[in-house]
Amino acid sequence: MKKSPKKYTDEFKRDALRLLKTSGKTKSEVERELRLSHGLLRQWGKRFAINEIENKLELSDCAQLESQIKQLKRENAILQEERDILKKTISIFSRERHK
Image (tube, rainbow, N blue to C red):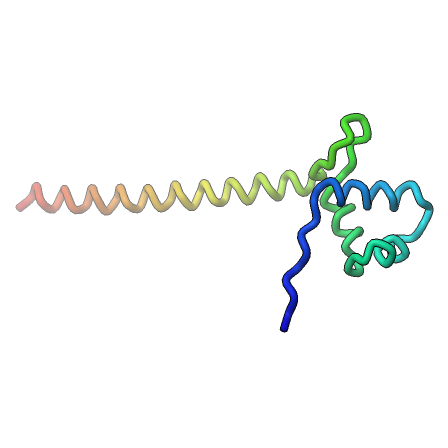
């Protein structure tokens, strides 16, 4: 049976990335100590950047753009669906007027 992936809080991710940065240990060593899957810290490092001033975990520029693209694609799909509905409605009403 396959286990479902664990969910980690942003606070945990921030602490893990900070530990990696300040401990002088390798990613593999930190992952072993925290019992994380191999490569997880690398993924978090690519996706998140630590804002030291505000002590917040933020999406990196690339991840922000990917998120924005995803949102725009969803909005575009909704607008296309609404447009198609309006086209069908116009078609139905125009047929009724010509009868």
